[in-house]
Image 1 (cartoon, rainbow over the protein chains, first blue to last red):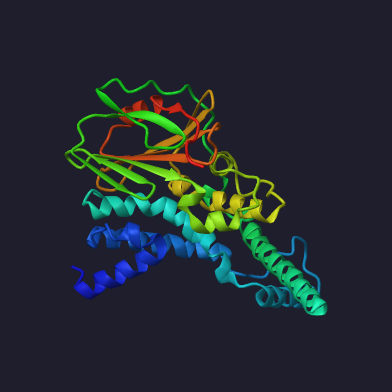
Image 2 (image 1 turned 30 degrees about the vertical axis):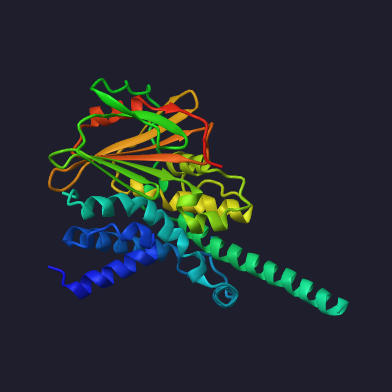
Length: 110
Length: 229
């Protein structure tokens, strides 16, 4: 069973994702926590897609492959802030999980 | 003063160009990884269209809450729950029907990043169900955001390998599936597009409702012109 502090923490996190007006209606319970854990795992999988890694060469790498990839990687790292595109994961997650949270809040998940 | 304004203008242009360059670089990464994605959902699409389902025969009530479509749902619900872009009808014995509006208004980040996009919500939803991560990505920055949003949304419907049905009628397209979860809970989901109101998508979901009854609700859907600005 979640204690008061856990419920508050969960509510606070969910408010950041869905907004206060929506989450304010939700009852923090075990089912809701289960949905949250599923969403978190899904979000991590999605974030993995967004993580920066050296790109595949597409042909047999020459001697210049690695240094070039490292240089472009560092350039990309310097010129963009990845956090600015993480919404591409969180927004589809919202579309996917909103109804699950609502069902969980009403005790209708299972 | 003129020199100062000119400097500010140049800096603004440079800053905007750098921001675009950065965003393009980030999207290059995502698209590259999606193109090489080996998971089933990346390449899964809806099945070829089958005839539009027959409308529900039970006693119904007409729902006009969605901007793009009207439809009928079974009577007998005991509670209605309504929050932003969301409406849930609760019946007895754990049965529930959920209606969600998927629009740019419902997703502030999407709205913010796709202001200059020529794509609509309908285009994005169609891409989710008929496109794959290996398809050609649009070229303009805001379209690329929308496209990638649509591709990542594929996980919501194709992750478990359940076949997604498709049906078309006039300006309407429906994509729907039925999943039995662990514990036996039957969950049905659908996305409905009306080409005449392409900025608003209807997402339907039911729990503890037969697939036949759910398809009957889809069968009752009729299009309407969007009433929202």
